[in-house]
Length: 178
Image (tube, rainbow, N blue to C red):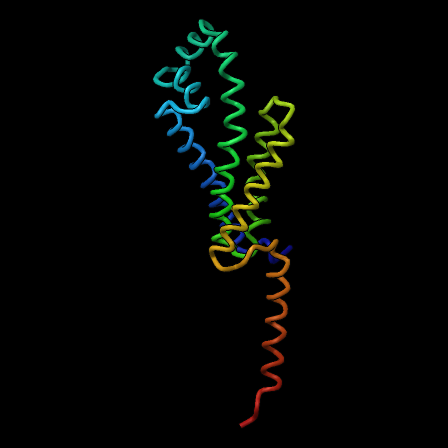
C-alpha cells in the first residue's frame, strides 16, 4: 500500500481528475456549440445563451419538450461522453504511472462514480459506473503500454522493485575483488 501512494501516483490522481473534468467540459461544450447529438441539441435548446431565470421560465413554458429530450440527452451522456472521457483520463494516468495505470486510473475516476451515484436517478447507474471504471482501467492500460510500462495491475511492478533491490545487494556482495 505504501508503494501505491507514492508521489507519482498521487500526482496522477490529481492530474487525472483535472483532465476528466476539463475534457468532459470541453466535449460537452463542443457538442453544444455544434448542436450535434441528443446531448448537444438538448443543452443548446434549453440552456445556451440564457440566464438562470430565463432557463427556468423557458423550461416551464416548454415542459413537454424538456421531458422528451432529457432522457435521450442523459442516455447519450452516460453511454458515450462519460466512458470516452474516462478512457482519455485513464490514458493520461497510465502515461504518468506506467505499469500501475489500470488500477490508478480506476481509482482516479472514483470521485466521478460517487457523484454519478448520488446525482443519477436512473436505475442503470450500477451498469454505467461499471462501464466508467472499466473504460478508465482500459485507458490506464493503454497509457501504461504507451509509456512502456506494460498493461498490468501494478502488483508486478511492486514485485519487480523488491527483486531489483535484492539483486543490487547480491551483486555488490559477489563483485570481483581487484
